[in-house]
Length: 223
Ligand SMILES: [Zn+2]
Picture (cartoon, protein in one colour):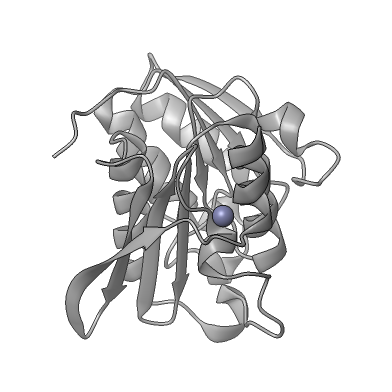
């Protein structure tokens, strides 16, 4: 197993079902600084899978609610709360200066934007996704496979978590796994393990390599 390497500054994008448990896991591991990015507000339907947000937080910004709970639980933790959407215009500026980025978003376009931007910046990204009773996660490293090596383009008509529903505990499992992956570089830089979780089956992992015709990784190899 690769050695744990405690990142000093981690950016968690999305403070929902994945970002809440991921930020808890990172703070528990001793990461000294977290940047939280989310422009969404807490809805009552979020509460079963987003443990930083409680009934009185409904209507508040998720980053404000999460930053408050994190600061209360971990007084020495540095937290920046950015209530802004991640866009192609601001992604590089927001993510620069972090050692690792954790993808806690719900939406294919934002996930591809994160993958493309982190590849360009040379920052490891912990991809995660959860839908119904299933979840997956993998660590995207410089020199290794990216999200486009797995899925060439964002899927059309993919349902969001809100549309398809999410088993709350599965979001907790995947978010916790993302925190773990944020602490652990891939064993071989050119390879990644795709972790697949299914509430009805044993966890499994699938070896990923860069796809020869991935347009993002082609550019990385040429740089
Ligand atoms: Zn790629």
